[in-house]
Each structure stands twice: as C-alpha cells, then as structure tokens.
Amino acid sequence: MSTNLTVTGHADLTKSKYGLRELAFKGTAAPSTSLSRRVFEHFRCPDNFLDFAANGRFSFDAGYFHFGSNTLCYGRSCRNTRGSGVQPSALYDVLDDVVIGDGKVGLTFNPTEVIDNLRLERYATNRSSSDLLRRIYYLFRPLTSLFLRKQIQRFNARNWQDASFPHWPVDTTVESLCEALMVLSLQAKDVTSVPFVWFWPRGARGCVVMTHDVETEAGRDFCTELMDIDDSYGIKASFQIVPEERYTTSFNLIDNIRERGFDVAVQDLNHDGRLFDDKEEFLRRAAIVNQYAKKYHAKGFRAGVLYRRPDWYENLDFSFDMSMPNVAHLDPQRGGCCTVMPYFIGKILELPVTTIQDYSLFHILKQRSIDLWKEQIELILEKNGMASFIVHPDYVIEPEARAIYENLLRHLKFLRSQNNVWFALPREVDTWWRSRSQMCVEKHGGLWRVVGEGAERATLAFAKNVNGKLVYELAPSTGTV
Image (cartoon, rainbow, N blue to C red; front, side):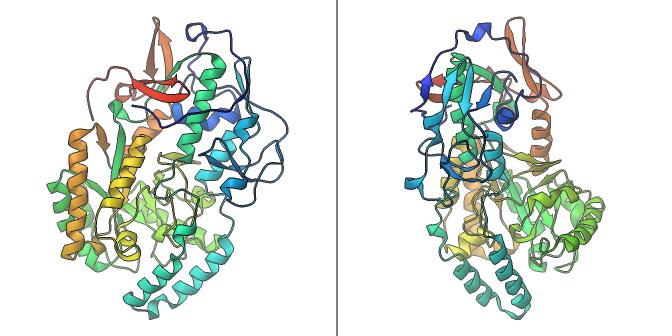
C-alpha cells in the first residue's frame, strides 16, 4: 500500500554519509526533540531517526502557510510569511525554506505545534459569535417545531460549501504533514526506508467504528431492533445514552446492549447544547457526568451536537472522547481536527468523527444515498485511517432512512470481505491505541521487531521513499483481524 504523496522543492538537499544499516537506532519510547514528537507518535519509528531543527526564532503570532502545495498549516514560523486567513494562492510555502544537512531536517516551523493547532482546532477564532447564536437558539428551541428547527439548521449551514478549510469531505492534513516530514527525514538520513509500528492490529488496512447516539424516547425504544439490524450484517456498535431529562434508561437495556456484544457510552448530561457555555457550570455538570460514567461502567463520552472545548476535557473521567469532527462544515460548531487517526488530548484518547452524520446527510444535504459515505470511506482508507460513523436510532426508524442505513451496512460488510479492515468498538480502539503508544521497534539479531505490551497483535511496517513518494510495506503478518 502507498500514500498519495510527492515532495518536491527542498532547498540545499545535501546527503548524509550514513546508510540504513549503519544507523544506531536506539528504539526507545520517546523522541529526542519536541519538534518531532507528534510525527514520532504517528509512526512509532526508532526515536533518534527523526531529527528536526528550527532554522531561526519562531514568531509570537500564528497564521496560515503552506507546507507543499496541498498541505495547509496553522502556527508560528521563523519567517514573516503567515497569512491571517485561508487564501491558498496568497500563502507562502515554507517547504521552500527546508534545509537538509548532517542527517537533520531544518524547518522554519514547529510540526508538533502545527499538528496540535489542527487537532485542537486552535485555528478557529470566531467562537464567540457562534456561541451567542447557539445560546439564543437553545433558549427558544423548546418553543419550536421539528420542521422549524430543520429550517434553522439548514440556514445555519447554508454557506458550508464556501469553507475551503478544513478540506471537504475528508481532511487528512495531519497525515499528509507527517508523511511529508518522513520523506524529508529519509532523505536527510540518506536511506530508503525506516521501520515503524503499523497503525492497526495484525496489519489491518484501516478501522471502522459504528456508533449510535440515542436522543429521544423513540430512539431508545428502537435500540433493540437496531441491534438486530446491526447483527444481521455482523457489525457491533456503541450506544451513547443521554443520562438526564431526554428519557429514562433502564439497566435492563444497558445490560442487554452489553450482553449482545455492543457497548454503552455517556452522551452529554441532558443534551441541551449548553455543556460548554460556562466553565463553572461545566465543572458542575462534569462532576455529575462522571458519576454516570461510573454508574453505567462507561469508558467513553460524546458531547451533545458535537459541541466541544478540548482544553476542558481534563475534568472528564473517561478513557476516550468521540466529540471532535474531522470536518465540521455542516455542524453548528464549525472547525475540524483535520485527521483520521486517534490522538491524545491529555489523558483522554480522542476518536474523531470522520464521516458525515446521518442527520446531516438526510436533512441538511437532503441526500438519500450512501454515495457520500462511500467516498469518505475510500478517502479515509487511502490514509489507513479510522472511518467512524454516527447513526441515530431516532433517524432510521422510518423505512426509507432504515433502508439507506442498511445499504451502508451492506457496503461495510462487502468492504470487510474484500479488505483486511478492522471493525471495532470504540473501547477496543482505545485499548489498542494506548498499547501502541507504548510500543517501539528494536533490532534483535539483525532483524527489526515490535516490542512492548500487546506487541503480539502489532505488525512491523516500513516507510519507504520511492522517488519522493512515501510507500508503506508490511512485514509478514500472522493473520487478519
């Protein structure tokens, strides 16, 4: 398999005198520099392989710039080359400033900072105005009909196609940046390949995660039938339960969900859209949400309507969160994390929502096919990422919508029969990604191998530079997922 990447236009491409066999890789679990930390975590390659250096002093202010023609970044740089907005033709390309020499890659920006800025949506600066409109909407929401709410939501999303960043329908800027920097590192070390820990267990090409957000009594009552539908296609899912006000939830339902091999997570507190309005109120609600996490034995959390403030997540007692969209053009809170891979926000693992929600597909775009879902799946798997879905029990009760959902399940079943794709519950992804984050590659008897707890599920892979293009090759695997 290969990545869709070609890197050109470097400055001063001098060669290292060392070959791959002569490199003294340590294989420890931590990178040697903060500039390379996020790229190291992405690949889990030998820690001293990635050697980035700053070519100058970083600016105080952040802005947009290119790193190659197709990779848009947001952060500080060592040059006065940042743009305040997303105008692709007017932005400077810092790839032109790259200097390679003595095994190092000299950069005029900090890749770790840029990746964090994307994953945590620090580029989104218009939050205050959107917060005010959201508060007004939820203040009057109880007085509106379903028809009127749909009209308001369509109006709110009316200009979604004008947004050029993040890239619709799937944004893989983080993956593209990591790949480009790996190509440069291979050139700096004058080697053609480097070993790393493959992204998914047993060499899976990618991952698929199905989730169901239960929003109303009708949705709650449809959960059992929805599990029957999922089971008929061999797919398990996680059900996100709203603890208060929306409906009552019996432990019989929760036990039934788990006994059937599905899972339960907590969705917000009462789904009123105000969880993140005020820090003091959030802390009060978070304490109650944490109690429900213990009550339901839930490891996962999702915020209602995907409202989010990742810098407040430290107050949530969950192992993983599922509230960050990859591209949020159609959501009330715009933005997007620009990655199709899990990543850590402090102690919490983020499992981003990487495909369009069923509600947005059916009621905002008014599409009655799975064509967009199929396109997104293909783009995600091209980057060996995680295709995660939100399908609400509430919105697939009526026959036409249910038929569309079954078409998706049918397509996913076919995908699993034709490809080595891992179908997993969110908690299983959480367990795997935490294990992988502690693994490394070491050389024993002249051969590379993955070491660390859980390494028996891991696959050794090699990232290769083939004419400026990053190509992945897997070592022989013990089986499929």
